[in-house]
Image 1 (cartoon, rainbow, N blue to C red):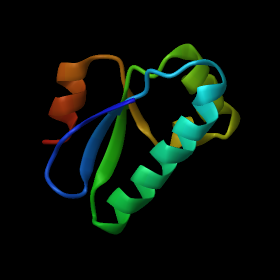
Image 2: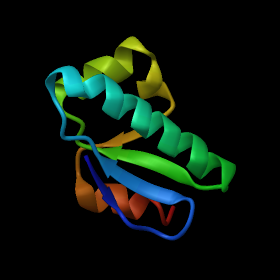
Image 3: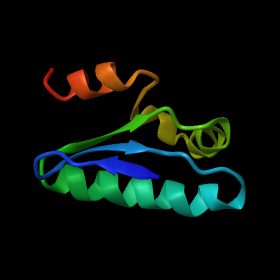
Length: 80
């Protein structure tokens, strides 16, 4: 997982994990979202792999995260 630095409260997370490491990473992403929202920010995901996306979907978390497949569009979405 790679986090691109932004001003306080904003983060773009690239979920690159697979296998058994997906569950802990998903919970880390959820914790990051919670902290960002508390600071009036947001967390958006960039290109989660199939395993991570499946875990997000099983927990219906794909509905609360903005998920992007293109880095430029993801970065641009913070300005919108």
